[in-house]
Image (tube, rainbow, N blue to C red):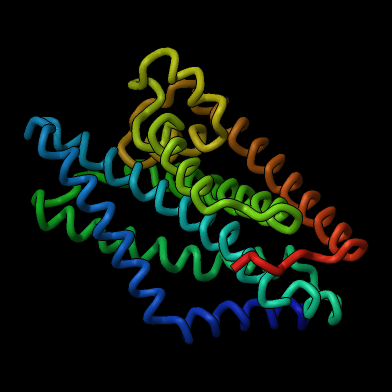
Length: 266
């Protein structure tokens, strides 16, 4: 039998998604328009004969960044609201972990990402006459996206645990997301990056599932051997998940002893 507390968390975020449906649509449309402008600017300078390769690469790079950035914003940044409204104490009183509540943010996070990615696909298809081949190896594509999502959620939880004590600056979230997108093997395959940046990219966790996604989408060869990328991505995702859960538990213990400073956070 499913724990009633788990059901309550699922219901909470599903209900919030419905009640804030206009904000949800607005966020999805804003993400789509912003990303489409960026993509069109990049594709203007791409030779027509290279579109069949460049287009899927650009599309999946944007799709992965959308998943990553939304997960970070809708967990890490939302924590300020969660704390300021006094929800930490309310959930503690009924013995519900804030970690479980924050993990439930995957519902609005993935909902926004999914709608935005679908809209981006149709817009690009209409403009360019079709995004050619986006799932050559579907199993690898799904595995890569799943691992990327786990890493993104874990990172969001890590930011949330820090926010319990110090707060997470919004500018820092924007800056880190943009830097990771450019040099983290998300926007561009690692093998295409300049050598110094390539070294940085393979240190950034997201680059490894991103390589798997590109291989699954169009068969683009991974920078490191595919089997190694798989093992490394799984280990990193597991390590990030365990680290995130440990940090959020430690943050909860800290709050139980010292309380949470919510004044001035809004």
